[in-house]
Each structure stands twice: as C-alpha cells, then as structure tokens.
Length: 541
Image 1 (cartoon, one colour):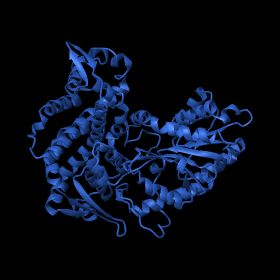
Image 2 (cartoon, rainbow, N blue to C red; image 1 turned 180 degrees about the vertical axis):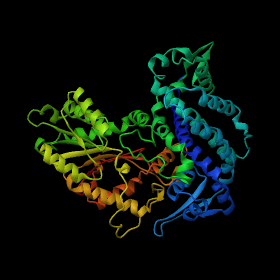
Image 3 (cartoon, helix red, strand yellow; image 1 turned 90 degrees about the vertical axis):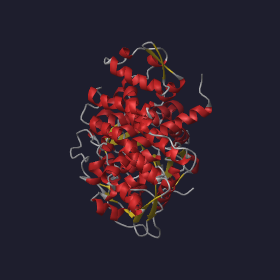
Image 4 (tube, rainbow, N blue to C red; image 1 turned 30 degrees about the vertical axis):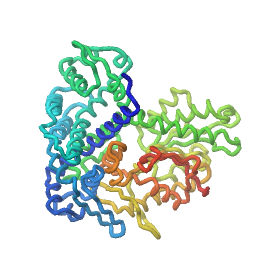
C-alpha cells in the first residue's frame, strides 16, 4: 500500500525527532550524570556563568548543552546580550523530562563504547550492546505510559530519541555500505547477501522489521513502503551521525579538557567528525539547495556577455564537485557556455586543506575541466587576491565568489571593534575551545569577516549557501518539523557560528553587502528556516 501525504509527513517528523535524539541523548545524560539537572530542579533557575563555576564546567559548551534542552522544550532561557548574561529556568516539562533522561544510559554507553572500534567494520562487542537496546526498546524501556497527555508526550519523545540514536548510525552504515541499492530495495534478499555475519545482521533486520521497515518471510526480507521512505532518505542522518565522535566525548568537552578534539596536526583525520560520512550525508541533503543555485547561475551567465564575471572562485572547494557542477551548468545551459572560445571561463578552486586541493586537482583533471587550484583561507581574502594576481594574473574582484556552508566554520578571531549602535538579537550559544562567546562579539566577528570580503565581491557578488539557527522556543514549539536541535549541537560543540537568517543578512548589510531579493531563498519557506541562499552584492537594491 502506497504512503499517503499524511503518512509521509509523519515519517519526516520521525526523522527530525531521530536527529533530535542523536544530539539530545548524550547531552542530557551527561548533564544528568554530573548532577546539573538535579541542581536545576532544586534551584529552579541558574545563571550559566555561576553554574559553570559550581560544576567546574567549560562555560561555552555547558551553554550549548543547556540551549539544546531548551530546543526540546525542557528548559526556558533568558538571553541578555546587553549584560552578556544567560539564565536557564525549569518549566512544567522539566521534572518529567529529567526523570526520563536516565533511560538514555544504554545508548550513551553504546556511543562511548563504539569509539574503541573501527569506524566502518561491523564488530560484535558494540553489537551486543545494541542488541540489548533493541530488546529494551521493544519493552518500552519499562515505561508505564501516563494517562496525562503532556507526560505521555514527553515519554514518547524520549523513546523516539532512543530509537534515533540506536538506529541512526546503523542506517548510515547500511547506506554507505550499499544496503539501499536497487538490488536490495526492489526484491527480497537474505541477510548473508549483504553481510558475512548473517546471524547478527539478521537481528538488526528483525528490529527494522519490528519498526515496519521490512516484511519477513522465512529467512528473507523485503522493504515495505515505510522502509523505502527511510532508505531513500538515509543521507538525512549522515551529517548528524558524523558528529558522534564529538557526542561520545561530551563528558570531557563540557567538564574536562575543552580541547580534547582539537587536531594539532592538520594533515591527520579530524577528531570531532567523521569527514567521509559528513560529505556523504551532505551530498544527499544538499541537492535541493543546489537546484536553486543553478537558477541563479543560469540567470547570471545568460546576461550580456560583457557584463558577466570572468569566472568563478569556489572558496572551500572540498573535492571540486561543486565547481565541476557549476561549470557543467554554465557550459550546457547558458549563453556563456555557447561562447566559451570568445569568452573563456576562469575557474578557481581554493581550500585550506592540502588534501582537498590534491583531490580537487585530480577530479577536475579527470573531468577535463581547466581550473586553477590554490590554497586559500576564508578569513584572508587579501591573501587569495594577491596569490591569484601574482601567480595567475587573475583579479579576485572580476570573479563571482561562491561557497557552501563555510562562513560559519571560519576560525574564530577576536573582533577588533565592537558593534556600534546596537545589541545582538541572536539567541545562539557560541563557544571557542570551551569559552563562552558574547553574542555581540560573534556578530562583530562576522561583520569584520564580511568587510574583508566586501572589496572583492561588491561588483559580481558573493553567492553563498549558509546554515542558521532559530530561537530555541521556536524549535521547541515545532518538534518534528525542524533539525535545528541537531544543527545547534553539532555546530555548537565544534566551535562553529550559525546565526539566525535575519541577523546574518543584517550584518551583511552593515558590511556593505546587500541581498538580492530575486535571488534570496530559504529552506523551509517559513520561520523555521535553517538554510539560506543569498547573492550578496555591494549595491543596495
């Protein structure tokens, strides 16, 4: 039986709740273990600075953690950016929610244990813990559901969190391993066809069958419509799951060494994130954004040829895929593409990571695309401009600058000047290596960052896809409709600075960069938007 529109909406809500769980379970359980939740219940409210001192915590990450609970509706926050004070208060949900946080113990234990094993290989020890979680889940972890609808809602919320953190990593592992290939999705199959440890894999499939993903007959499995829905959206879990190396270290991050995941050797794999998994998840999740980017690119390169940019520079080019995609769009779907002999297209890929540069060169060469690939730091456009001019005779300001989900991931620098004439309106929780950052400083830092770029992008613009936060009370009122909690956790604990959309665009305007209303998009098209596409230029429209 095919899924109805209502069915699909409910399943999408489940995915959002699963992502909430991957972020919330380790956060809440760590605070429970340390006594922070009991302290809040006893004292009713707490200033985060005083709370950090009382528990010898790293205030920045403690603030991130408490804001996550606000986004789940379990605490209320008062953010005063004038005095740089943040207070947290319990509400009518706090006592019941905190009581049920003990149920996270098994999944958090699994997170911590799994760090001792290979990231990709299937191994028995963590599976044994997972199998026990499956068994307890079938029994609702011993919960006797309340007849009070508010209490029951919190109980179900916690159980869905547990479900998410139990199956999320498994979904990603299966997706990256090929489980959701047409071969398996379109016909019945046996466990041994996918994994050599058929006995253990059979137990995993049994649990998914319990969830309604598979039909089991004898020793064969077949996807249900519900299972196909999740399988086709497996990448939606990828980005959040890729930060499990961070989530399993929250005890140390919040209450110990705040720099435990700082990689002092850039040539080595990152410690806070599984980057391969992150890229895999991003690739699936970002397709809808790239379709809108295509529309902007096509419009720009269908204009009068003498008024077009000479080329494109992709700062943070990664593996070169986005630059390759843009070239194909221009060459195949625009006026400029028909005139490349007379109006050649300059392509520049820049990245801070030397490994990324090597991969980009190899991929673009394989695709037979000419491009300059060079080192670049998003915080120093002047260095990029000098390099392009000195070594290639290219003026950075003659190019359209593009980048995806990068500005919020810049290295933190203390702003030289404070905001003038206004106070930050952001509700965000920001940190640098455990230190809590003043929201006014975060805005001022972004302002200085964009001002450095303004001379180079004022003419042809900065085409940027950016990630954003939303107010925690808004997230709490829309559980199951947004992945804001997961974004705030993954980025807050890893020193990334996602601001609200209106705050971001206001700062850009202060830097002399104004959005083009015709080329502004947000996802979703509501107050819950956590992603925006902007074409920022140096002239007001």
